[in-house]
Image (cartoon, rainbow, N blue to C red; front, side, top):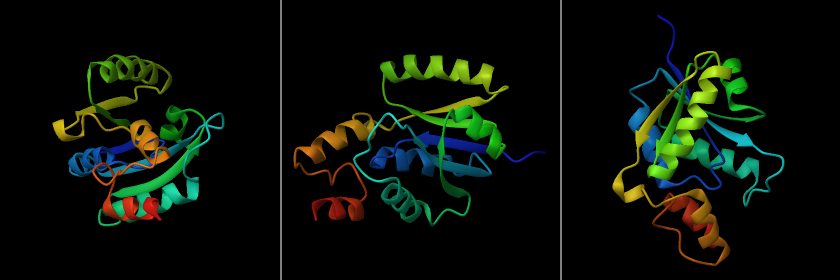
Length: 157
């Protein structure tokens, strides 16, 4: 039987408690999970790639089957390179479902049968997104309820 490898792609700018929850709930579902930062050259991140990779390394170091990576280009191409047969995605609401359903169908076609596994966000994380957290940070607000404590402390400095 081949290894069940899943890629959890995102900007993770910054990683949120919702992202972490999805990975933690998935570690027993897959042999390996690759938490991968997708680099979009047309988007300027709030935090550097190096900082985001560092945060991901710290957050997931306790899981032997979670690996951190980054990629440019199409997610399906990265999945092929990694021999991953699954994408891991979280759904917070109906809007996420509509968007993610379309993307998963396209990925299945161009990704040679790449399957997307969806996990429903826990209610306490259904309102949290990196986009909203970035806006709070830019406005000087407290993000300690949305990101790991060590990240919140780094941001406040």
